[in-house]
Image (cartoon, rainbow, N blue to C red):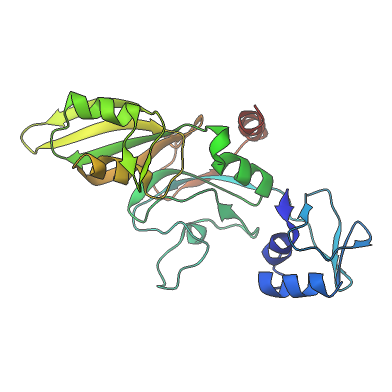
Length: 238
C-alpha cells in the first residue's frame, strides 16, 4: 500500500505537490469514488482516475544490480553524477530499495513495487544485510564482540549483529571484517566502525537477504525471478 499522492507522482502525471492540490479539489477518483483525503492508501489493484485520466499501471519490475563505486543511489542527482538508474536500460520507472553510499558497492534491489520496498526497508522485517568491510587498523577481538552486542551511533545503540574477522594484514595494518546487520540506519556500517576508532577504506554489501551478486560484474544487473520475488515477500510477511 502506498499514499495516493506518491502513486500519482510516481506515474509521471504530475508532481506530488500538484497531486495533493488535485486531491483537495476533488479531481481524483479511486475505484469510481472521489477521494479528497491526503495520504489515502492505495494498492496495485485500485483504479485511479486523475482529472478524467486513468493512471497507467506499470507492470511490476524487479532488478538486482551489482552497484559499482562512484555511483549515487538516487533516481537523479543535482551534481550530475551517475546514478544507479543510469546503469539500467529499461523503459519502466524503478526506484532503489534503500541506499548504498557513493563509494559502497554490491547488492542493490530496484523496483516499482512500493509494497515490497516498504516491507524490505521496514525495521520490523529484520532483513539480514551482509557487508564486507576493509578497515584501517588491526581490529581487536574485543571490538568484534562490541560490533555483535551493539555500539552507540547517533545517540542510540545498534541492534545485535553478527561479526567475523576475515583477515588481518599486519604489514599494511588493515583488517577485513564480515558484518551482518538487519537495521537500515544512515551510514550505519561506517558509523559502527568509526565508533570503535576505525576508518572504513572499502565497503561492499555482499548479500541482501538471500540475494548476492556473485554472477554479476560491477555495473551489471539482472531481473529477479518470480520465485525470488515470492521468497522476498515471504520474508516481509512473517
